[in-house]
View 1 (spheres, rainbow, N blue to C red):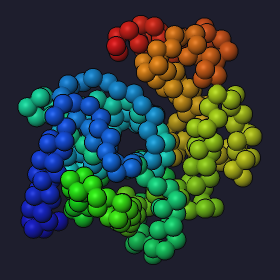
View 2: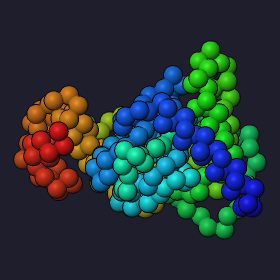
View 3: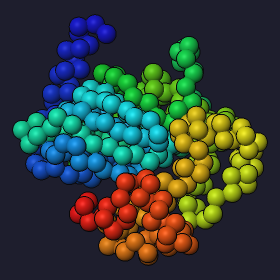
View 4: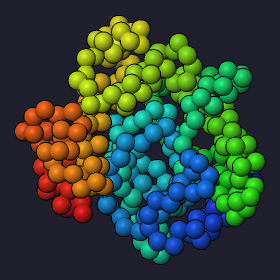
Length: 300
C-alpha cells in the first residue's frame, strides 16, 4: 500500500471510531436498525467471553483481541478484519483496554445466499499460490471495505435512507470480501459441489440438530463424502473433529442457557441432549475448566 492509502485508512478509521464512540457510551453489544449489523465496546481487559458465532465479518476499529476459534488462536487488532465463513465456537478476550481507550468493533452477519450469487457472477481472482481450507481468516482490512463499513454506520444517522441504501452497501461489502484476499475460502464454502461447501452443509445440519446423537458415517453420507475424507476436510475447515465440534455446540449452548435463562445444570444438560448429568458435568469441566455451577457463578 502507498502512503495515500495509509492516510485514507487512518482517516476512515478515525471517523468510524468517532461514530462508534458516539453510539456506544458504555460497554456492551449494540444491535442496530440495519439487520445483521452490530457494534461492540469493551472496557474490561482479559474477561473471557464464549459464543458460537455465525458467518460474520468483524472489523476492529480500536484495541486488540485474542480469540481461540475452534482449536486455533488468532490475534488481531485495529484496522484488521476477521472473516468467518462458517459457524464456529469462539472464546475471546480483549487486552490492553480501558474506559479511556476502549475496544471498539463493528460486525456484519454474512449472507451465504448472497455470497453464492456473487461468486457465480464474479470472475475468479488471481490464484494466491497458497490454498487454505480454513473457515476463518484474519487480514489487514482493505480501505474500500473500511469505507463501506463507515458509510453503513453513517446511515444510522439517516434512518429514512436505510431501506434503500443499506442493502446496496451490504452487497458491496460482500463483493469486496469475495474479490479480496479473504475471499477465496468464502467462495469455496459457498460454491455448490465443492468439498468445503459439503462441510459447510454438514455444519448447518449440526447447528440445527445438535441435540441429536452424532453418527459421523451417516452425516458424511448425507453430504456425499467418504467418512475418512469427511473427517479430514471437516478438520481442515474447523480445526476440530466432528465429535469435538458437536460437543462444543452442546456445551456452549448449555452455558448460554444457564447464564441467560437461569437454567440449572441438570436441566441445561438435558436440554442440549445429554442423558447423563455426570457425563455433562465431566465434559463441561474439561472444556471450561470448572464444573457448571461454579463456572456460571463466577461468570455472574
